[in-house]
Structures are given as C-alpha cells and as structure tokens.
Amino acid sequence: MQDLTQDAFLCGKLQLWQPRQGYRAATDPVLLAAACPALPGQSVLDLGCGVGAAALCLARRVPDLRLAGLEVQPDYAALARRNAQENGVAMQVEVGDLADMPKPLRLDFDHVIANPPYYPKGGTPSPNAGRAVALQIDTPLGDWVQAASRRLAPGGWLTLICGADGLPEVLAAMGGKLGSASVLPLTPREGKPALRILLRARKTGRAAFRLLAPFVIHHGKSHDGDRESYTPRASAILRSGESLSDEFR
Image 1 (cartoon, rainbow, N blue to C red):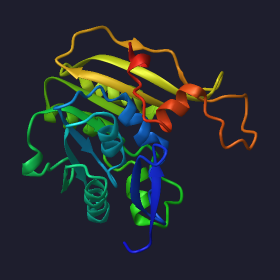
Image 2 (image 1 turned 90 degrees about the vertical axis):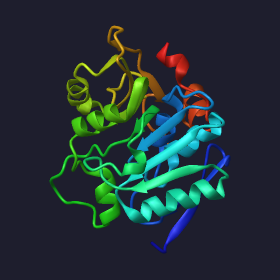
Image 3 (image 1 turned 135 degrees about the horizontal axis):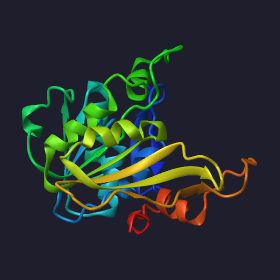
Image 4 (image 1 turned 60 degrees about the vertical axis):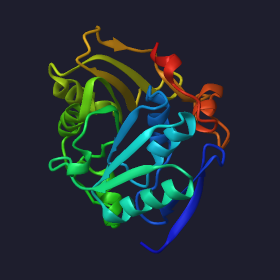
C-alpha cells in the first residue's frame, strides 16, 4: 500500500495515514468513538479497526486506555499500528478474523467497539479490494455481535454503528448475553429517515430496551453546498471530539 494521504481528524488533534484509493474513514468511526462510554484505565477492543480511526479518536478523548484492534486486512492493520505510534498512542493491533480470534485478543475487555460493513453484496463491487472488504457485508452482523459478546467481561459494553436496516439482526444476535440496549438513530437532517444507528448494549445487562430521540447531523432541509452544515452538537462531536453520552442518558 504505497499511495497514502495523511488526513486530519478532530480539527487536527489526530493525523491518520489512509490509502488514497480504498476504504477511507469518515464520520462513522468518529461517531462510534464518541458513543463509547469508556473511562480512563479501561480496556477497549476495536473489531475491524481499519487504520485505527475509531480507537484513536477515543484515545484523544479518554486518557490511559488499554487499546487493542483486530483487522482482517494486513495493510490496514499496518497503518493502524503506524497511526497509533505517530500519534503517541499505545495500541496492540492483530491481524485475524472474527471467526478465529488471535490468541493475544482472547481476553475479557471492558468495551468492544465495532463499525461492521453494512452494504449488502450484489451489484458491482468496488474495483479496490480493500474498499470492497471494508464496506460490503461478508460476515453477518450477528457474527460481529456474538464475537463482541465473547470478548466482553461481565458488565462490559458493546458500542456499535451500522446501517439502520441492520438493527433487527443486531438485536436478535444479542440473545440473553447482552441487554440494557439503547439505540440512537442517526438522521442526516431534521425530518429525514435515520440511515444509521448507534447501539450500546451491556453484557449481563437487564435494563429495558430504549429507542432514543434521533441525533441530527446537518441543519437545513437539504444540502445547499455549505460545507459547514453540521448542527452545533454534531460539530462538537465530529470536530472537537466531544462525547455522545448525553444523548444516551
């Protein structure tokens, strides 16, 4: 992977190397990091960590985390290690698959975060293999949830972002192992359908399911060419790295 760009996240607080052609992190990993309720000193596993965007955004907000990542594509795993090192963050990144977790990651974690692929296979795939693997569903969403559950310590939290149409599969996969689920719909604009959701669920949790008020990302009824169209709250999350915990209360 030779053709790279170095991109600023969180208003330059984080600099990430990414492939110029292929999967490139955008808002999803930043929102995922903002939704994770990790506290200093806790352990976090990022399933499908890519170049490390979500875990490293989380590290910018919460100090002294013990970070680990699993990535199936060796080139992306290498970039995640490089990005962690160059941003001064300690992060263990292992190459492997959900179905055969590397031994160094067969531990109990306080938190598991995940941004699974959510475009169904079919049609014309991306000509870039890395982008196709990162975006198109190969491993079912339910397998991601179950893999996360196996890696969580009792009382630990899964935080996941996926397409809104994947929510039924995610909830079904939780079974009796994950509970206390809260779902935050992500809508591009006021009055528009939610295209993605953020979910928090707790291992051994027993609280009632909650569907929260939608989080609106852009102001205005339609795109008008204004690049600064984020709502104030979305800007605080995506640019300043603030937490989404208030929305989950």
